[in-house]
Amino acid sequence: MASDGDRSGFRSKSFDPAQALASLDVNLPVEDAEEYENLQSFRSAVHKQQCHVERNIPGVSGPGGVPLQRVAAVPIDRNFTPDQGPIRGRGRKRVRNVLTRMDEMQGPLALLRQCRENNIRIKVYTRNHSEIRGILTGYIVAFDKHWNLALRDVDEIFQKKLRCKTPALGKSHTIKQEMNE
Image 1 (cartoon, rainbow, N blue to C red):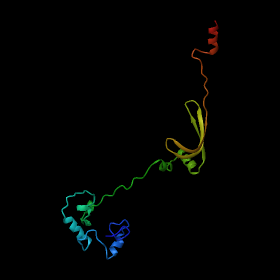
Image 2: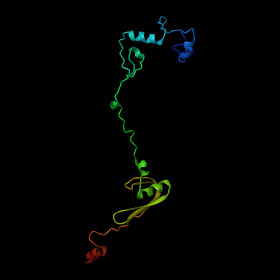
Image 3: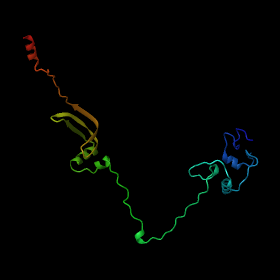
């Protein structure tokens, strides 16, 4: 039997199948192993055996996991009349998303597209119901038909409204006067 250093031994860690096939003095692990002329004769012998082990391996039919030889399917020639010919499909559906729609914009949104393509810095005024809330300046990355903007390198100037709290009972000097009386 071959040692661990022997590359042609079946049980060695450094087994080399090419060297084992090329060498003439290979020690087989089973002395009375049956020899086959080719792979097809081996497959037919294995598939004729009755094994008690059943394995469901996808793509493999036969005991021991040895695949049967695949036979190429030959297409059947059929004669069609011209009205039975293939129906032409619509083809691939065009991909439509925010990035593709930006290039199709017309009118005022086309100006946003030009600012994005030419890398022009824009100024956006944000507001609430009665006044300007803040000013944003930046470069357009993306936009849509609802005027939603994605900006980069943004500077924001936020204007917070100062509110003074008023007492619940009125002005503070009238409360002090009532307490002094």
